Each structure stands twice: as structure tokens, then as C-alpha cells.
Image (cartoon, rainbow over all chains, first blue to last red; front, side):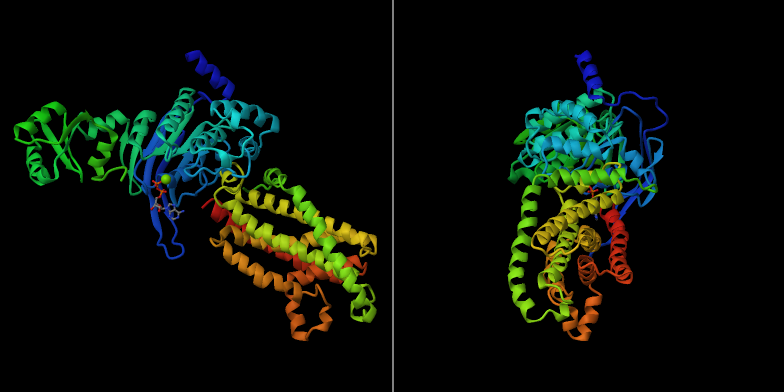
Length: 338
Length: 260
Ligand SMILES: Nc1ncnc2c1ncn2[C@@H]1O[C@H](COP(=O)(O)OP(=O)(O)O)[C@@H](O)[C@H]1O
Ligand SMILES: [Mg+2]
């Protein structure tokens, strides 16, 4: 299995370890203001954020819609100049060396920019030629990338005929045509069905294991937990927390969460009773959601015993491990996905 | 961004060629059949005109007088369309520009490549037109060959500023309206169908501001082998100035749209 991956890395020609010289990407006070246009006021989409990442990391931006993830990614992709702050990548300055940086990165934008009039293979050809690759090189890499994306039998079909998952895989294949050192993925699985998501995750794992540095954005906490070594949580253009998925959960929430649902008639009274239990020896904190209560506790079963001892009979009670969703809720008071 | 190399614009040219390849047979047929039908029809009507009076035309047949003007006018139409509508579509989802702008290509590379391709299409169109024109005996001298680049320049004088507008606009319909109510009437005001000497003086002054009039005059003088240096400099200079102004303007709008 190990050898398999290594040989695929070699045949794909994906950039593996290269001598490291400082951080791969470093942002300081990075800011994007979308100027006022046609009645709409100017909008601060990214509000002075700092982050850095090293070669080989899988780094994530987790946040709800409108948090500023895409605005950040477009600056990193060097297709949107920062309004202020600095962004250094691959030892260069994103503000002035955009073309040279774009030559060395791969980009999977949020709304795929495939050319609908061309076939799968032609999309790869045109894209590879934009990087100045020879036809022969593009042809050779296309075969491997189509194999990687499991699109060999679609090679000569028009992009219009592909499903959402296939388009996404093609966009990822296309982003690898220049053998990038850094791959940017903006919401790679949004809008895909669960099966298509899992196929995509598997491909991304494969890239990660080959040493490609990944930056991805998502508003799915399970995706962030699965794919990211380290992530920042974004809200309203700012970074509200940073760390590995595990360390964020450890730092901001308890080990387990007890989810309680009550019958409509009981809800109000039950909410008051449960709120009175925290902070206590077992239940540390309670969040009230429209349809359920979340009780944070290091042991969810103990918390349920305390709830039952208080004379409450929930319709359903579920004990689960705490997730990044809970971290987000704790930090911002809102859910990731409305 | 500072050094300007021809290689990146040629990549955009190649990308657009790849797409065009699907339809080029169809467009070549249209490019030949249109002038054939039109010029044949005009040739018949022209005989009637010729038999009454050709004084204002300078003693040549109406067909010979008209054909280069029509060539310039159809180049204008194509230039307007592939410049304006083309840039709009290429920048929209499913178009080619958004992919290109994520690569080392600069917005200016993309712009120049697109205009290069428009120039290529304009040249094909005009060459087809000239072929039909020659077959009908309306290309009296070998000078007529030079009407092909002159017509292409006329088209480009529309394509460059239109690309600047087309990439920036949100509404396709506004461009269509301008096409219908500004560009089409230019035909009538630019001495395409009848000599300007036959219209009131104030209308002649309007025509001098029309890029199409300069294109029509340039092509017509070349076709009749009577282009003077001064006329060539004025008409050619006017058209080249439009191209340069359009490119400078489009560089800004392309950068704003593709790398905002
Ligand atoms: N090109 C743009 N012009 C104006 N406002 C924009 C533009 N792109 C994004 N925004 C605004 O900036 C904010 C952040 O958007 P975005 O970066 O797309 O967030 P996310 O990807 O996290 O959903 C939103 O309020 C959005 O409406
Ligand atoms: Mg987004």
C-alpha cells in the first residue's frame, strides 16, 4: 500500500518534499475590502488576519457562509490583490509576484471554472498550455490525472455532460497539471452527495500522503476534522481560533456533549431546569438551540443521570463526542450551517 | 507583468482556436454565402443605377464602389460582436477567462490573445468577402488584396473598445441595444451605400466621427487603387487610435474584472 502510494506520487509527478526555507505561506494583517459598487456599500470581507503554514501541512479555513473564506483564498491564489497587509508565499510577495506564484500553485475555486464548451481532455490541454507546458507534457500528465480522477472513460465528453462530483474531480485534476507545490481548494465538496464527497476525500488524502501542501475551506466540520492537520475558525472576516481539530476541541469544549430533545409542552420548563444544572460538578455548560439543548460534560452519561435525577424525561437523549461544530457554537454563539 | 512576451497571448489565441474549431466550417460557409448572395443582388440592382448615373461614384460600377464598403461594414459587425459579446461570455461562468486568470497568464495576456484571435477571424471573413467580390469582378486591381488588413483594422477598432466594455458590463442586453440602434444605423451614415456627397453637410460632419466611415473610405480607396498618402494616414490613423485607446481602456477593465 505504502509502495503503491509512493509510485503513484512518482508517476503523477506531484511535488513531494522540497528543501524548506521558512514558512510556505505567511499572512500578516491581511485585509480585503470589496469596494462599494452599484449601490452596495464597501465591505470588509477579510479583517486583518494572520496565519502561516509550513510545507506538507493540510491547513483549513472553517467558517459559515460569508465568513470571508473565499475572499482569503482568492488572495492566496493571487487573483485578488490584498487591500492591505502582507501575504508572502513561496518566498515571494503575492502583491507583486502574482504570475510567478500562480505558476507554482494549483487552484480549485469555489465555483468551478471549467469551460463548458470543451471536452474533459481539452480542458486539461488548454489549462496546461496556459502554464506554458508543451503539448506532449500535457498529454502525458492528462492521462495520469484522468486516471487519478477516475475520468478516463469521460475523456472525450463535453464538460456539460458531467455530474457535479465528476466536475469537481476534473477541476482537481486540472489544478494538478502544473505539478503544484501548494493546492488551494475552496469548498471542494459543497453541493456533492455523500458518496461523491467520500470519493473526493479519498483523492485528497492521497495527495496529502504524497506531501502536497493543502489549503482548504469548508463549512463542514466533519470535513475539517477529516482532512486538516491544523485549521483556523473564521467568522465575520476574523480568525476566532486556531489549532489542530483535537486541540481546538480540548481548549474550547468538553470531551462529550449530551443532546436533549423535549416535547413541545415540556420544553420551556425543562430548559430552565437544565440551565440551572450548569455550571456544576458534572454539567459544565448548556447551549440552547431552537430544537434541542446541548449539555457539555466530560462524561455525557453522568450528565444524563443528573438530568434524570432532576426529574426530567427527555424525548431523546444522545451522548456524542464534542466536535468542531461545538467549538464554533461556543466561540460565536451560532451554528456553522444554518 | 512588466515584460511583454508574445507567448502568453498566443496561448489564449490557441485556446480560443480550439473552441472555434468546432464551428469554423459553418462560419466559413456563412462568410462566403452571405457576400455571394448580397453582392449578386446588388450587382443586378447596380446595373440599373449604373445605367442612370454614376457621376457621384467617380465613374466605377456601383458594385465595385459598394463592395469594399460592405466588407468594412461586416468587419465592424464582427468586431463589435466578438469584442463585446465575446468578452462578456468569456468572463461569465462556463467561459474561458476565469480558468486562464488562475494561471500565470496576466489579464493583459488574456486580452491581447483574444484580440489577436478576433483579428484572425476578421481577416478570414474579409478574405472570404474579397474572394467573392473578385469573382464578381468588383476587385479591379491587385491593390484589392490590401483591403483585407484594412477591413480587419476597421473591425478591430470596434473590437478593442467593445472588449473593454463587454468584460465590465453586467447587462448583455444593453450591448445588444447599442448594436441595434447605434451600430446598425452607422451603415447608413458612413457612406456605405451611397456617397456622402449626396447627404446634407451637417450629416457629413457626423460621418467623419464614425469609425466605420474611415474604414469604408480606406477600403474603397484601396480597392479602386486611388488611396493617397494623406487619406491613408487620416483614416488609418483614426482606426489605429481607436484600437490603442480600446486596448488601454480594456487593460484596466480586464484587470478589474479578472483580478479584482
Ligand atoms: N466580489 C465581491 N464584491 C463584493 N462583496 C463580496 C465579493 N466577494 C465576496 N463579497 C462579500 O464578502 C463577504 C465574504 O464573502 P466570502 O469571502 O465569499 O465568504 P465565504 O467564502 O466564507 O462564504 C460576504 O459578505 C460577501 O457578500
Ligand atoms: Mg466561499
